[in-house]
Each structure stands twice: as C-alpha cells, then as structure tokens.
Image (cartoon, rainbow, N blue to C red; front, side):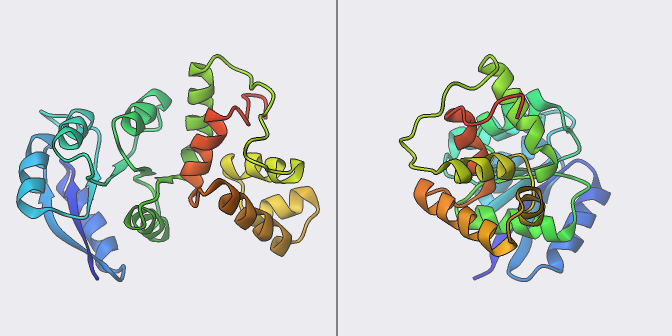
Length: 219
C-alpha cells in the first residue's frame, strides 16, 4: 500500500524539491502541504497522513511548537524532522518532543527513502551525519563518562565493540576494515546484536547505548 505524506515547510522551493524526490520513490505519495507550523494540526486532522515531514524553522508557529501540539492531539502520529540545523540541543528537544526521526536537508534521495521506510516500519531514524552530535549531547546531559556496562543484554565483548562503532555512525565496511574482520562476519554480529536487544534500527541502538552507558565521550 502507498504511504501518505504531509510536507510542512515555509519555503515553497524546499517543498517542491522534497516532493520531487518522493515522486521518484516507489510506495510513497504527498497528499498535502503546509507552509506554517500553525497549519499542521488542521492539515493532519483533515488528511490523516501516515508520516509528517516537518521543518523546525518556520514563521509564526515554529516546528517544535507544532510538533508538541500534534503529539498532544495525536500521540501515535509519525514525524520525520527535515532540517538544516545540527545544533545538538535542538535535535535532542525534537526527539524528546516525539519526533521519530531527524534528517538533514542536504540528504540524498536514498537516505530519505531509508528514513521513510524506517518510520513506516515503526522504527526510528537518525541521520548518520548527526549521530555523534546526539550521542555527545546525551552524554553531556548525563554528566560524562560511562559506568561499567551491565551484562543484562548478554552481548559479548566483540559485540559491544561493534555496537559502539555502529552507534558512532561507522559503516559495515569501515567496521570490518578497522577490526580486521570480513564484512559477512560484521553483518552477522550486527544481526545478532539487534536480535538480542530486539532493536532493529540504528537510532534505537544509539538510544540504547546512551541509556545503558555503553558509550562515553571518549569512545
């Protein structure tokens, strides 16, 4: 089935560009647009889209305020932030306000599709370009270095090592090269990590690693 999208951005050219990318992506269609955060709730109520693509910097009602209003009225709504901002505090506020993903506006069509697919599958998505920003901000809030890792998750030392690299935004190929392993071996470890944790997206792994203090600012 086709996944329906609502675009919310105060720049018509940006909306047109995103719409063009989506029109080239199978399985997705834009059913509405809004040029201001104040219109978000009204448009969402009328159209009931599957996913909202929301900018944060808009005139009048800003993206964060609009996000909070939407989540208060529709707690199960799925929102993907599409923003130019890399400020760690702003990113954290967006995630804490209920956004399911955060994507930078200079993204590629492929990454946009990956993000939309993640949300469509009830997962979260965090652009690899800002993974370190989010991790460092979260660790700073929790006052720095990690505590000794608990073993309730049953991950092996090698899997913990690979998990740290994954949440730092390293690709499978980079991890394999850095650890002297084959790509297939890293892929197997990655699959086992996700299965053991019952977390199947990178954003979820990032949040888990922060919560369990598996990573530190010095990693």
